[in-house]
Amino acid sequence: MKAKKVILLLTILLLPSLFLILLSHGSSGIPTLPILGPREAIETDHGVDTSYHKIPSFSFTNHRNEEINSDSLEGKILVSNFFFTTCKTICPKMTMQMKRVQTKTFRWSDVTLLSHTVDPEADTLEVLRDYAKANDAIGGKWHFLTGTKEDIYALAQKGYLVSAMEGNGSGEPFIHSELIVLVDKSRRIRGYYDGTDREEISKLIDDIQLLKAQEFVPKKDESKGEET
Image 1 (cartoon, rainbow, N blue to C red):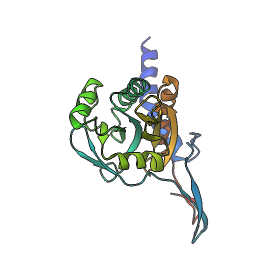
Image 2: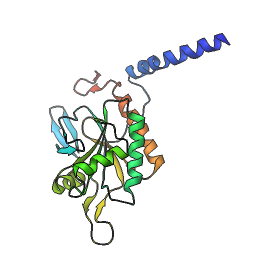
Image 3: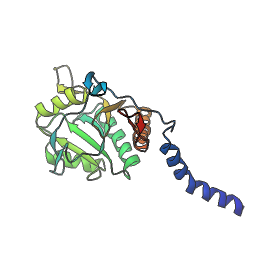
Image 4: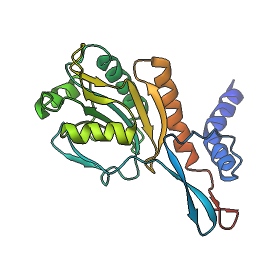
């Protein structure tokens, strides 16, 4: 019995080290997430390279009246969605799933959650603050953001490539995507997930771990054909 406990303890202690050793040799076997969005071929000194779509620079105010912008989020993996507090259909489900993501990633300081209101006129800072409190948002981890409609809609449509706009009079006052978007530290879109589907968000959480694991994989210097 004692021997089994010793073996179990050694396994727990050694697994992280063995994992990092495998990663350091490059052939980690870790799946690579796709880079989504439009891309274009560009000429470089070393031939043709690919330029990927990236989330553009932005600046908004969070529910704590703090400025949150591209610079303050440098080096962060982003999990982003669009919502409004009076939405009674998909928003409560999306917010519940975002809360799951927060719970699963709260120890990872390089993962940040961003929820952008598509109704900034009604969703004042006080309203967002109450909404954040009701959903147990952790300060500095999960930001409920507001700004002008023009800036929010433009970022959704041209940056995250999801819908966000005024309603067309057929039901909801605002139309926005149910998708939650995963963005890497280089501001590239790496995944879209149905924010109303628990299994989809479980995959999102797994994919965040893949992104973090990939940071340990040596990258090739294409000009020299060597790993760095």
